[in-house]
Image (cartoon, rainbow, N blue to C red; front, top):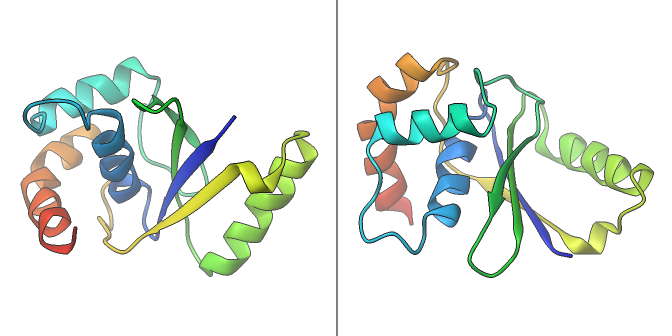
Length: 128
């Protein structure tokens, strides 16, 4: 079973955008920020917290999608995740850890997400 986790150097909001893009890749149009916030609440996300790993769902290819924000050094966070994967009895080779090159610093609530979403989406599209 393949897994992919998006990692952003913030509270996790930018990684959430990338995970949502993968889950909704078959959609005709991008969901509105409020719709993504409602989807996030349905899958159990109450707020963005660095270091928290969230399951976003399964994409159209059957890959399990996750996301997380982090503070500090990306290499250290990735090593910690690899050790957690091993402790859970899974193979690190089955996990793709994708660094997100954009950030949404300070976005921790759904209200902040909805407000920041247009800017974050514009940056995402420019760098994609």
